[in-house]
Length: 364
Length: 256
Image (cartoon, rainbow over all chains, first blue to last red):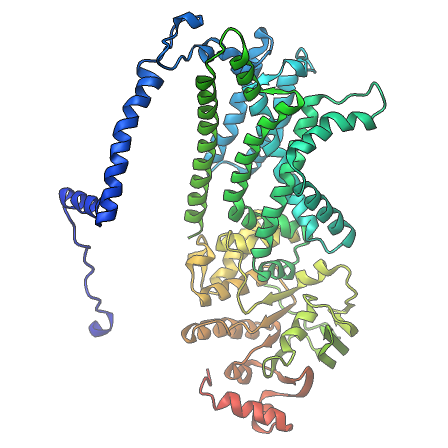
């Protein structure tokens, strides 16, 4: 019995002190060979040269206080155009008394991501929140039903970007899923329609779709009937993103083993129950990272609405850079713009990474 | 547990002149077969003989082109398939548990979603059946944390949760390591002792000998021979059966 159950005692791996580990890391990752050592030195020298310069220009010598261009330090960045026009960047031409509505809408959008972090949350409550969010946002921002209406021409800046991005994300995903399912449908008419739609949209640049939405739709409508321009670009962005998402989801559907479909069928699941309970939960888990990448893409594509006359944050930036008041400060303005998009997109991509780890962890 | 009703007079499965083609390939040829309530049928034959296709036709995972299949007195015509499948349990070679659900949820979801069983009742029934396959302690794990034999036992419990009147087994032990085959066969033997109607495609001749009421031998899409196990193993009639038995019994993977 002893012979059978005896197992050699487990041992811990050898430990090295911090100093030993550090010196090993430096040697192995920074100076493993002559070529690498040279490269390391060159990069370090470059960093040593440009980081202080950049810091000085961007922050240390830069101007943060003042109200006109005369207050600017001519040899460093001047952030006054951004600071002075901050409200314009964020709220656009939204009536000042109504800005709380924009703030609330932003909060609701951020809330969606925060809620997704909590694993234990009831899935139905989360879904209800996500379904309600775009409707709430639209109602809050555009008004109606108790709130004073705000014209689309007063929309600009981050309000436009965040609104188009968030509402676009929430509507594009379900539509993309339906298109993906349709493309794999056994019914030829549905399949053909979905293939046609997906391929057509994917082979046209989004900018031309936006032009079509802003110019051509008007031609087909009876005179006097007009769709809100914001609604039109929102719809275009949703339809465009959905086509791409459909392809991502379809890839996920195809990679799922056939046995999953068969097991579900054998247990008496119908088509929608099979999809809803068995297939889509697995596919969506797999495709969360590429889907979030597409969301990031959508977020950046919202800037294209500028070409049809909707002033998003890029539009505000351009008009600021072109204004007589702040002419000559386009560097700062566009650096700010880059930072704004970087922060949001980087956060989204970290978030995708987190979800990915989370889901992998879940399953093993 | 719901056990096949022995007061039923007619056969639970009746197949007549079944023909099936994949493209031009004729995979099932004039199959006629009927299974009585409570009967244990083992179908064997070389690979590609159409035995898996045959039992997949019984719950219509495969569609046939000619002939009739009657299950529980109802002819299969492509309608009301879900109702039929809820009464016919199936176990697959590759288990096909749902990897995103816990063991318990694998067993309760089909009941709640398809039979409308209340959650508490579904859990109770699931735990009872998991207990029967000795997997109750693993109820909160995910399938990927379990061995193949354990997964297959759960797959059996999951199918039984639907309280099926017939159980189909499609090579349930072919994907398993030798030491796990026994535990799955044990569960299947227990099920047979409870009186379940079973149709098993398997190469486990020891199981066939012990449990089957009748062994069906298929080759080239045809039923070549069918007989009770004692007769089938001792005095096979057809030379093809003899050759098959020779190959499989001398291979050393026998008997369990």
